[in-house]
Amino acid sequence: MASVASWDQSAQQFQQFFADQWAKAVAAFPTVPAGAAGPAAVQLDAAKLQELQQHYVREATALWSQGVAQPSALKDKRFGAAAWAENPLSAWTANAYLLNAQALTGMAEAVQADAKTRERIRFAVEQWVAAMSPSNFLALNPEAQQKAIATKGQSLAQGIQNLLHDMGQGHVSMTDESVFEVGKNVATSEGAVVYENDIFQLIEYKPLTAKVHERPFLLVPPCINKYYILDLQPENSLIRYAVSQGHRTFVVSWRNPDESLGHLTWDDYIEHAVLQAIAVTQEIGGADQINALGFCVGGTMLSAALAVLAARQQAPVASATLLTTLVDFTDTGVLDVFIDEAFVQMRELQMGKGGLLQGQELASTFSFLRPNDLVWNYVVGNYLKGETPPPFDLLYWNSDATNLPGPWYAWYLRNMYLENNLVKPGHLTVCGQALDLGRVDVPLYIYGSREDHIVPIGGSYASTQVFPGDKRFVMGASGHIAGVINPPAKNKRSHWIRADGALPATHAEWLQGAQEHPGSWWTDWSAWLKGHAGKLVAAPKRYGKGNQYKAIEPAPGRYVLQKA
Image 1 (cartoon, one colour):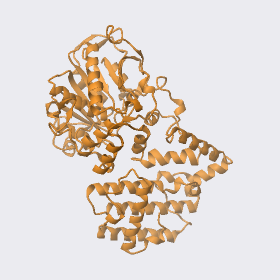
Image 2 (cartoon, rainbow, N blue to C red):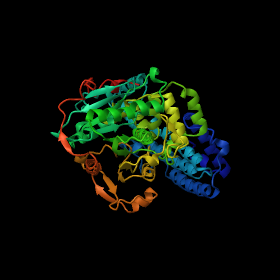
Image 3 (cartoon, helix red, strand yellow):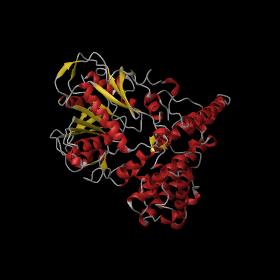
């Protein structure tokens, strides 16, 4: 960051500083497409720039005047430890950094450019500002220095060991991964694999009730993650909850692709996974129809599969639930900064004909969407302080990365994120069928999370305007994962529902008539799902059905254990 004195300069110098920082940010974070807004393209609003300069000079003068003798209070959690306040020079350094960061962020807001360029500049500046925090450097972090002295250097030695360990595993440790084992203390709901092919295993769960609803229930999780986000612990397992509500429950467990599966396409995943899972669940359950749920990308794939079935004039799904799902990709949030024609073409050249998107690359991208919380927080704790992060099942799952077949990924980028083709009737052909979501006339339960940074709430809500059938929209508090995994017993957060059931054109209009309800949305969803699940029948005594679908192995199966 620039020194405080360098800021009391002309507008031209101020703009040049921004251009220099922008160039450094792009160089440091090459995943941000640089071509859309290089330094030469930066133009700042003159009025905003003048206002920003005046504010900066005023605050910088005050900071210089008080010097290190009486540093002002630090309001950022990165500098919340007593060591920062007790060391005047450190406190002054932190305050100077925060002032510079505020100014640089303000300059990004003052950029005059198209919306996409502005978002890219904001993103790059956010990455640069987060990386340059004095808390990230041992020489500037008094908390880490005090710990090194108190432990006689042991914290630094442990930090180096932690760094070497993380380099070996290929990612920064967000939790104590040694505490968890899939099938032992995460993904523990009792069940069995009753079908498998090269792409997925189908797990059936042991009933927890004497009777079950006659229509089986199938969950389609995202293939970019492991399925057990839906089954972390018994007390927060959506799968166990569904079973406890009397549903004969099945889940798709995706195989973690290796090079031998690097040729798989979107059509392969729809025909040989989603549609196959629907058919097998239907056969095992002996039901004319099943209920289905799709989460995130799983919801997008389920929607495409339903459109294929509609084109084939088949209706094996009685109702569908879409959790934090994009169908209309008009509003994709911060992920849009990565997507343009050049980026998609590059990916198509790299892996459109075959190959893998490595799971760690995808995981790193998602982590840098929240750099302070999901990257630098752990860099400081693990390496500068020599700490082991506490055990947390959700973060263990988050680090359990999954590869993606290149052709699937490249097709998804172009047809969903870049061109938004799924909502264009007849524009896409999948599994030999022209897709038209307007023909998917099944009851839908659509859920979105208010603070979701991966599937913005407006993007979730947009699905209500695409499908023609009976729909119910519910908004929950929190983000992409925490909003979904919110069991009723915790009595946490809130959810919002419109009593009149109206679904106006925008989420903002919907929210004006919505009422807040304390606690989890799961109970509302459960009541809705029971209305589509049919009568109660005796629970099955064994997994699968006959000789064709026998228990292959206990849940969670082999596929979920495969590492990227």
